[in-house]
Image 1 (cartoon, rainbow, N blue to C red):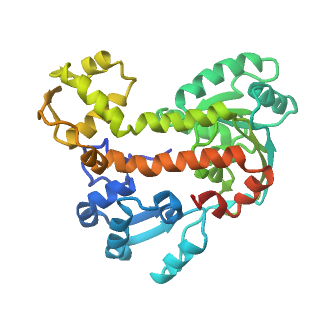
Image 2 (cartoon, rainbow, N blue to C red; image 1 turned 90 degrees about the vertical axis):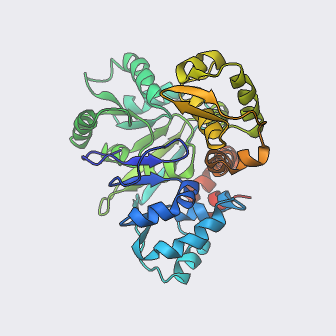
Length: 371
């Protein structure tokens, strides 16, 4: 979420653009694969949440060795930013004589209202508003911010003035986000329905309640919600209102975005009967949801099984799908860590006690030590 003129590039397995932009966010596999190009262009390299790289999430990951062999080459222009530090990371930094790190300031007084498993989510938000308190409601998609704002707005019309409930997500235009940010800072908003973000809007709301209406997909979404700007002293309650269906939805979404070898094989066989075709025709023929066709086509293109020319996709080879080559694709390698992290965190969210979750806000080693 940016409120300035910089337009960051998100470089991953679906990105085919240039890397000489002012700000580039990359995945670890992309960084390793395009290291020489990145190292030549970059003026500074920031490693965000290095704890994740050193945790069990990347255990035996095909790009972990590449990360360790390359990091010392860019250490002179590197910085490290993160919310969580434990012994493995401290040793890693100490071995490289790194003594300064950037870390957000956590809110000192945090409580958890544990309503995991509840199906009365709207009622919980209405109860908070009914007590005259502000609330930030976190959902997992831009679409849900809109639909929930509509349904909740009608149910809370008796308790709110016009304009006191608003939705916010990363798809809004710059000027829209700026206006909303200003309203929030001036305490004009009582109910903010938002996607997860690290721009501090939930905290800035001046509210003492953040409701996880949808289950967070990773631990950083919780950490971001309890972090504030340096010097600010706040207190809040995290209301955990998600249920098992939300956790299953999270793992299902990761499976959808990062297909297995078998799923790619099935799509490849179906594509043979469709090509040549435009991406729109491919989506219709194979009943793909928006965006998913790009995932499969990018993997097959990287394996040189399909290619595109002037918007039309063609078969480039009569070869069968090689499972070994699939696992070498950038998309598959990105998915190894993403799916492992989502499943592990979903398990932790469903099994950890309230006390354990509260403890993890200051000591996250239990959450990140993937077994």
